[in-house]
Amino acid sequence: MFKRVLIANRGEIAIRIIRACQELGIETVAVYSEADREALHTRMADKAVCIGPAAAHASYLHIPSLLAAARMSGADAIHPGYGFLAENAYFAEMCALNGITFIGPAPEAMRLLGAKATARETMLAAGVPVVPGSPGVVKDLDAALAIAREIGYPVLIKATAGGGGRGMRVAESHRDLRQAFLAAQREAAAAFGDSLVYLEKYIEAPRHIEFQIFGDGYGNIIHLGERDCSLQRRNQKILEEAPSVALTPRLRAEMGQVALKVARHANYYSAGTVEFLLDSDGHYYFMEMNTRIQVEHPVTEAVTGIDLVQEQIKVAAGEPLSFSQEDVQLRGHAIECRINAEDPANNFQPAPGRIEHYHAPGGFGVRVESAVYSGYVIPAEYDSLLAKVIIWAPSRAEAINRMARALAEMKIEGVPTTIPFHRQIMGNAYYQRGEIYTNFIQQRLLAG
Image (tube, rainbow, N blue to C red; front, side):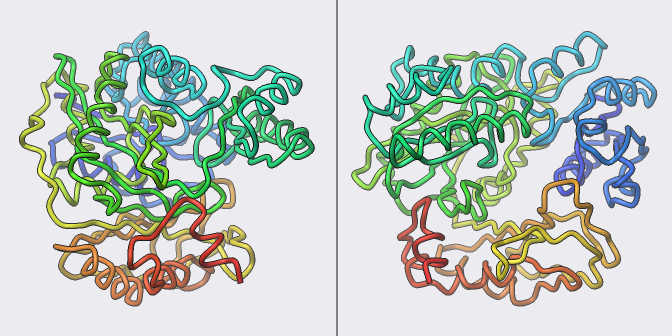
């Protein structure tokens, strides 16, 4: 087992990893930018190292600074969390060259599956059902127009290095495509340093279903059921739940086997997520694979009782998986609400500033993952996520009631947050019946 782990991240995921390490008896090293000098993760770790100025490219994305911090602190492993460098194969290789274990999959698997267009090509070759679209990267507008003419509108332009809805645009016509293609390229270049995009047929009102998979270095690979991530705004998830009310036991088993096929094709180990679109007729299509731990991993932990972050660390240290497919049993229902510093009344504008008062909800079946506190100043340079409220209950209806109670109890004063918006979701009759899809928020909550 590792002696000391450096967490190459910030916010709630850094704290989540620190806690997992503490329970395993591993020392932790936090890194922080100048904007995060007072951040909670720097206080909870055994050691904290400043790695640069506020801009992410000069700190959390600056590989030389992270490696220098690891060497200086004596860390023998690095956990990347999610976002930033979590799916960067070059970073994983540089860790290995410096004698540091990267807690995640092999660089080869990251390259094969992490780049969305490459993953799409790979899955086509493997016989996995994919959304109709371009076979790989679309190099110019003329090629994009030709592909859109072939598959039909509407089409979705997606960044191959993308995530979090960035570098993604919908086009309804040739005219739309001309603008959307260039806009997606610009946004992708700014967000990921990579302007490459590909095209998919835009499926109307699908569900976004993802399967949590886990593998070790001994050829063992299992799945831990699905998460329904259909509630999204601007292609970014805001609420996730497990299991999905849309999946029958037969469909769950079938999609789970396809997810494992994806992972085996890449000789995958560590935590990963295989994402599908599920249409209203029950047809599913591989969309992409995330080669890291997900923001929404706690809902899977809640219904399986398995600590995914600890398992990541153990597998990276050379241990076999501590559970088998037969050990994975889904119990009850879990919901996660992402609480962001955004103003729902002002088109969800990010709202950095000082938190004057913070109170987390509690009670049976309530879990909160957060890195904020009363007096904390939210930096303007990073993601607006403040906290995740995770609820477990024996049934979905009970989970919704418990989440409504927890959101009413939660207090964040000083900045606008999405708490009122999540309370609106919990009270929505369509949501309560499970009639959700990826443009649900736009059509059911914001249409008026």
